[in-house]
Structure formats: C-alpha cells, structure tokens
Length: 260
Length: 352
Figure 1 (cartoon, rainbow over the protein chains, first blue to last red):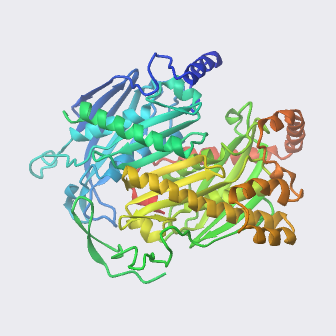
Figure 2 (figure 1 turned 45 degrees about the horizontal axis):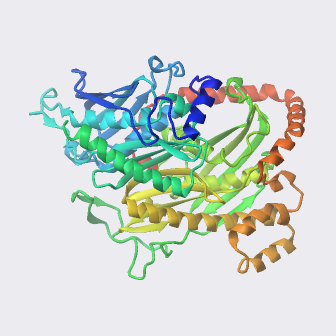
Figure 3 (figure 1 turned 60 degrees about the horizontal axis):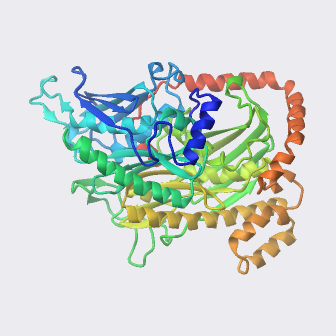
C-alpha cells in the first residue's frame, strides 16, 4: 500500500511472520502499541496535542479565526482540516503540495469530526450570515512509525477538546471552551493474508494491500469509514473489523480522552 | 419525482432545530420513497458500451438522473516514468465532474474531493484488473460526471467496469457499486438527491461478483446492527447491477440468440453461476480479452511469455506517439501541483 522504502528481505520476513499471526515487534495481531497524548503543547495555538503511538509522532494544532460562513449554513462555524506529510517524518515523504495519500487521510479525519457532530457548529456563529468562527485543524506528521491515520484522528479530537475560542483576543467578550459534544475515534486495521491487524507499523503497512478505517462515537455507532489500498476485503472481514474497531475505540476513549 | 413537502423545522440528533429544504418525510405510509421506489430498489439504470470512437473502451451510463461517461485508454506507455511499476500495470483512475453537472457551477480541475474519489475508485479496480500483464504500462480510466444527482462515484465505477471490459482489459470479473443510506431511521438502497443531502448516513460500496469488497466509504451515523444490515442490502443492490452489466455486455458482444437465451434463463439458473459462465460461453470471441476471466492463477503464469512479447510490440508501436503523450502527461502533473487548495473546506461538497 505504502511505497515506504523497506527491503524485499524484510518485507518477506514480516509477511511470513504475520501469516503466522506474529508481528515484528512481538505484539499479537489484536495488540496495540502504547499511546501517549500530551495536550496544550503549543502556546500560540488555540488548542494542540502531541500524540505518540509507538514510534509514530503526530502533532495537531488548532487555530481559530473569524471568517464568513458558507451561504448555505449562515449560522454555523466552519471546520477546515489539512494534513501535512512532512519530509522530516519519513524518507518517503517529499515537500510540496499534498498528494492523494495526504488528502485522503485529512478527509477521513475531517469526516470523523464532522459527521459525528463532535463540534457544535451552531455555537460558533457570531453574526448570522456574516461572521463565524473558522476552526483550522492542522495535522503535522513528525515521525512515521505507521498508523498515521489513527494518530491524526486521536490527536485532532484531543486538541479540539483543549481548544478555547479566543473571544477576548478579538475584543468580543470572554473566551469560551470549544463546544465539544462527541468523541469520535478512528481505528485502522490492515489485512495481511486474510487476518486483520490493528495499529500497524510502517513496515507492516508497506506489505499490506488494504487498510480499513472505522471511526466511531461514544454510543458505539459508526460515523465514518474508509477502505484504502489496492486489495479487497470479504464481508466477514469488514464485519469483524467493525467489531474490533468499536471495542478498541471504547478502550482508547476511556483511557486517554476522558481525562483531558 | 413528487414535489417535496413544505419547508419545515427539523431536529438533528442533538435536538437542535434546523430550517431547511429537507422534505418532511422520506418514506410515505405505503413504504415508498419520494421517487416512488421501495427501500431496497435501485434507480433505473441504462448503459451503452463503445460510445467513444477514439477511446480503447467506453461506456455511457444513466442511473436515475445521473449521467456518466467513462473511457479507458491503454494499456499504454506511462509517463512520468517514475510512476511505472516494474512488475505490473498501473490503473490510473480520474473521476471528474463537469462544471455544469451540478446546480452551482464547480470550478474545473481537481478538488480534494475528486482527488480522494479518484484514489479510492482506482483502488476498487486493482483487485480485479490482472495487473501482472503489461508491466510498466498504464491503463487510464477517465470517468466524467456530466449530470450529477447523488451517487456519482458509484455510477462512475459501474460505467468504468464496462469501459474496461470494452477495452478488452483482462479482468477477473466485474465490479459493481451501489450506496446504501439511512433516512427516517430506515435503511434505503441507492440514495437519491434529497436522501443524500438530508439523510443520516451514506455508505458507498463496490464489490466483485464473488462479494469481495473493493471500495467502502461511509459518513453519517449508523449503529453496529444497522451497518450489518446495510452490508446485506448493498450486496443485493450490486447483484442487480451485475445483472444489468451482464445484459449490456451480451448486447454488445453477443448475438441476438444469446440475448434471448439469456432472457429465458434468468428465472431458472442461479445468478452467480451465470455470471461466471458469461464471459466463457456466452460472449463470442470478438473481443478475446473480455472472455479472459482468469479464474485460476495458472492460466496467467503460462501466458506470461506471450504477454511480454505483446508488451514489447506495444512499446514499439507507441514510440512514434510518445512525444504527444509526454506533453499531456506533463500537463497533468502541472495541474495537480497547481492545486493550491489543500484545505478541506466543506462537508457539503461531498454530497454530490
């Protein structure tokens, strides 16, 4: 799936391990790496989070500005999500405008936040039809150790949860907290030899054909999904993946988000 | 389509009231939808193959009010060369909406939305196209949405499958795509425009004839149980589309007898079997490659040598034309880089 530079020998080794249900770092197929989330790591941003999943490191910053609403939603704030695969993060990433892979990931993160209704956009209206708050979610990938999408999704909601709306800076009264009402969490699974693995490393991503990302809400409903990569999945695999993702999301929410 | 109910006040799942053009109901007391369909019924679909003379394969498709045309060029030489894959052909898919295809004109050129759709749609074909043939080459699939009315990415995939078959690209089978969604708390197959705009979920899926899922996206809100049921429904939708694609293939490549025989046989024979037999028995050899279902891998390996020769021939043939192609492909690259908008501005744009 990824064109990450991994030697043929290493690919074969990892692939054969995975066919046996084992992984290069000794994890089980359904075992995730440790997650560390730090919030408010950038003072200049209205909200921020640093997420580490194993070696993967992603920083998400939220900037909030006043702008005009879209004509068809005059009383709603606006969410704009972008993702940069910074060349600092991998020998495989190049500087320049975002490529399809980055655009896809940003849009999957965006869909999770938007479709879950995580942000109450109607509370972000200043004057109907004229001024609303625009929320910029910028995902900055610092180290690609695999599973960027989950890190980006987790970092985005964590950063949003710590965001303040800067009324005071704009001379419009007192700051308020970002109106958050849902905690969507995206979980990706990769298919290797018919078995689904959660939380893939970058070399595992390099040998797999297919990734399925499932974003779910607190009540266990699904708000976004995306199959990515050149392979296919059976219906049974998809159903199994959904089940795993719902369980895993609940664990992460409990452990990492509820205390923010 | 019925006239929509009056503008009204509605509540979303958080209890906020919203004013919109959302119809008051999507499913009436008889269980019929705004356009008179049942919940498990797809919109009428017509397809015609071989509609563009310059393309190697093409298909025009109408699905409800969607009008989509797909063309396949190739296998041909791939520029820029760094995209070449040493052991397989690249399937390059371009989904594009005409500026006039929707109510408010859309700016021509790639958007973030179309870039994503192009990526996942191309990936929906990679499992079926026998990519080991024509290594280093490219198969370009262009899907143009001429008129959009909800479900354009699935319509484009359905058209592209037949365009690939029309071009004689060896495939393991067909791909059909269909969306399932949720309105009024009920699952509905193949969303129409108001259902797409104001519905609670949208789940486009593409699958092969043996039920392998090659595209899956979702936005909105579905419970776990609803999702399981949605997957069942979408499978039935895709089966209906396979049937239509099969008929279209036969009407293009078969004789009238085949069509009659087919029409007589639909009731009696199990569908899946028929679908597999289609390319071997019912399609005469006008286009050999279409009949190459490649159900077993051995076939492929045996013919590897032959294909290498084919590719060599093909390379020679292409020599002369390659200058022109260079230009076009460079432009393509430039276009992509010009795309400055790296921001996801709106969810609404997704709803075409």
